[in-house]
Length: 287
Image (tube, rainbow, N blue to C red):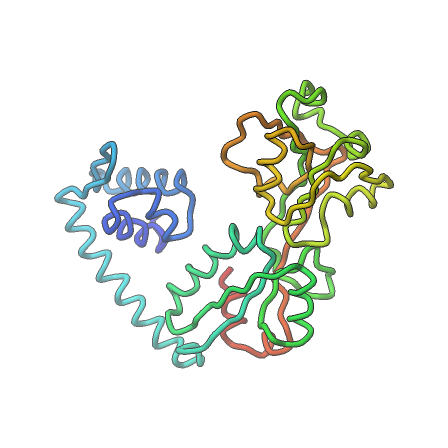
């Protein structure tokens, strides 16, 4: 079954000539985009694109299909603009604050997808520590903020969840274990440690304290989670980071599950003005 994302994907692929970049534009993964194109071509019974080594070109049938797709999407955008005007969503601004790791990974696709649907609404992203985000929410200087492990009474919209993992040099003695066997925080407590905060108060030291242990040999503290991986690779120590923050290049690194497993959730919380904003409520409904 073809949906609007599929049609937008077809138009994006034709525009940039690359499936990976088109997938980023419409907010899906590259593998998801490739599967969607295969499904569409299978449903139509014909090829729309020719996939070559460095680019993707459009077939003759594909050009005809794209003409109809562009016209359909233009009509849909016109209908949406009418609806936005009726709801007061034709213009405005949403100020959305987050700590760095989520700001760089989760929020861009959400903001881009919303602005495609509501081009008159500007989504302004602000970076801060989790403490700063809480202050901005309390002072009503932003409409939305990302909060770690929000309490139920805050009525947060959960936008992500991931596990904390241990990051070790590949030649570390503990790295001989299987990933499934994992490693306990108590086993890392006395190791030379690279403490990665990600701009948050919830990090390895807080996790260790919750587990009743103390990190006794913190060699360096960094805010950037990717910097921690570089330092671990260079043998400065071990670290604990969110799984979503792992680097693509994991050479000379060993990633192991924490035992017992520890997770973090992050959710969008409204300030007072955010709760009263039609644009903010539309943003949350469409996630």
